[in-house]
Image (cartoon, each protein chain N blue to C red):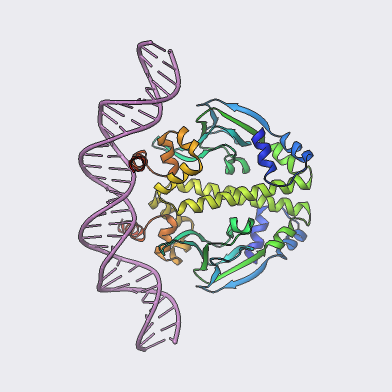
Length: 191
Length: 191
DNA sequence: ACATATTTGTGTCAATTGACACAAAAAAAA
DNA sequence: TTTTTTTTGTGTCAATTGACACAAATATGT
């Protein structure tokens, strides 16, 4: 849980005591490559923090194709937020693209944490605010970029993801076809 | 502030007393059509709740074009989140597309509210969680839709916006060109 | 190590899209 | 009301893209 500890530390000031309280609700786990984390009809009862590896979060379309909603990278909190907060079953799927080490926080523990003391509650609220503002910033930045720029941005900021994740999934994540992404890569390598 | 009062009421249980405390930090204001709410180099020090009218939130690109980041509709909280939470100056612009009635909550009041009592603090955290999960759900839903489906979805769920907002801005919001959106409208009206 | 399954690289072709240009209509300003 | 500005509707054309098809290369499982 080393990376999660770091994440909490740099998110704000927190006594060692409170930090330990937080971490005591986080259970370290492992998911081998190819294994399912969540799938259609599952209830979503946890938040996940990825310590290492990549997850593929996608929708199964009626025609059998998959639309990538997110490739989850290390050092991020992730869950199916609508389903988690509003206690719904999901229609989507999340599988491990590589072996994954993660920490799991169950809804019950998440809610309990908020009632331990106001310092922890404030800290958790501020993390939620940061996740929200990062999310929106990320989305805004993307809407200014072409497909090629999005790919270059990934290469720059998350090269490991480009190496590890199959091109078809990358393309779907960026919002284009496998062939178009391939054309971009060919062009870039020829220059 | 009638709509904001309704919004709070249906977001959770809150005594009349706490509701009044919340509303006492919200100042009702008016912005005439065409007026600027926020522009390049402004500091973002408030959250806004739109009671009526529409705002246009966009980026000014280097080549002079504008990329629409959001058309803000009534009954939503909105601000430039990254700039608000992280106290930055913005590079973007937000103007009124129609006369707008809104409520303003300043950062100072927002932070003070959280310290009044735990009920209010919990309530505010849960609103942040709802905004976050709605945002992500909205984004996921959109990534499954074609341009035409996005337009039909707007027609169904926000017809007033389609009526009031210029086609060029709608197109940019949906992520396409004015001409393509026009082709879609022509096709739909001929059927 | 071998057999099987998945992913990649590539070409062709049809369909979609964006860029440009401009007249008509509508809205805003004077 | 008249003038000016903004927005809309439309056509043409070139460029980009997605769909399909398949061989080569990798990765996976036994």
